[in-house]
Image: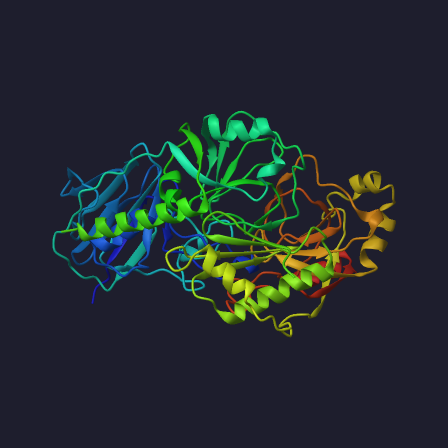
Length: 314
Length: 224
């Protein structure tokens, strides 16, 4: 039997294998990692009728260009992504949220994400990647996960096995952008001056370039701390907004350090994670306060919306 | 035993064991951590113990804050015999190529390099927690006259194996990483091993370590 594989002719900016991540390891210092945008990950695998934890390629801004070799395979791209399928030197513009086909010798060129950050590429077959702690999610800082913990590299050859063919399935879906990020007050909210509390909920913040899978650094009017700019280091969770001495907030994302020593002004609600991670540098955002009950209700609605989208894949 | 339980966002419980950082408070944190781990409560995704806090994160699709809070409040606490509590010897070389901040510390602490190192190596340290980066242990307590603030400008890259001190604590950088602690030496020991999924960390909370001074030749031999 011949091999099925793709060869990387351009790796893209930050292309890594990801799945739902790894749990029960924060106490040893290993972050959860996993996809940044959960919904777009789920949709990619549902369109192809893959298992829930199927590995995908996550890319940021510019995706990879690959050439495919082997038996015919299906793939889909999710997010707001411009891409072309190249067959016999002819470029065909691709559509997101659709099961497409790659035949032996075809190429896939993922050009860019449109006014967003992350996109996902999934295949109707299993990329052969290494697993650590039951997850292939790549953490490039700790060098854990698929591809020896590294980003996709030029000229790499990735084998794909267990290829199945599926019918032409698709979903009509357009990602919307978030303007108001909903948060719950943090455990150190009272470390900040009344002015700072006002600024936090009333003024705009800008997403800076110093943003990656670990965290999103924001810039705005300085948030003045009146108690202490350090706390005794303690656990962190995704969505926590820490404010170091410089007064600029940082939102913890999938690869965040497991503990940290800066005061926590607020935490982004779970229902808003997928939209927050998609904000490119330069985006203007505002924080809006909600209470725990609201956050739980909003999360139920978010889950219902995802279930509803899955049911609309035909 | 837990002084205060509150929510950290909508998918985590924040357990505060009090403001003091000492072995006694930390042992309570670790005991809760061990008990909760044994219970395997549905929906809990991570338990993150630190000096005086325990953060319990959960999957909001499977459970919620009220449910987990009730479980913690009704937990019948057993004194679980710690899996860990090993005594570990850590070889450290303080050659000037490794002890990046030793000269700076002479001024900060008003001691000679020899005095600083003699004091540092004279006692055993207790591991309070591991984390920030994979496998990084945090130890205490340094003597009162050994407590220095962090560097004013943190290093972008602290070399792997570096031994750092700040305030009442010391740590080991398991990877090259950014960091602001005062570096006084380097260990050739492999402190984090990702290929050992069962127990990737050489040092765990509750363990006692004794740093042992080695010279550059011994360091090189150990590194081979």
